[in-house]
Length: 175
Image: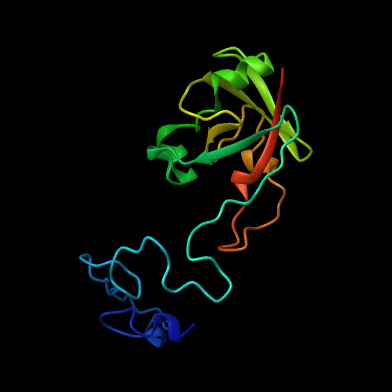
């Protein structure tokens, strides 16, 4: 850990930090990208051997009635700590009109999204903004019963980064 902090401080070192001294953090230049080339890279120049330099979508096989649940954060909720400021993350699921029709879903209706791992209750928004075969939910919603969105994820970490595999979660709807 000492090596990780080697050039981190303007006015001290790792030993000073351990002694409780207040230190100023050295900032990296703001006019360059923080990678080896210092440039915007559209594919990684430093990916380890055997790892693709571009993101790859896993091939997913879905059964009839299954949809892939995608998610991303909303601008005001880059982190769940902002629920203290903006209130709860909206419990909503965006669904393509063709999938809504196949599943008997109504715009503004309350439904459960479920799979073998868990269930969350959401309000459906029917929109062309998502493609058929997928639904979108804001990350990291918790429904009114206290069930978290990550309860639908299998608990198997991603190969890179070790985070949850949210964008491969298969779900169904029920009333």
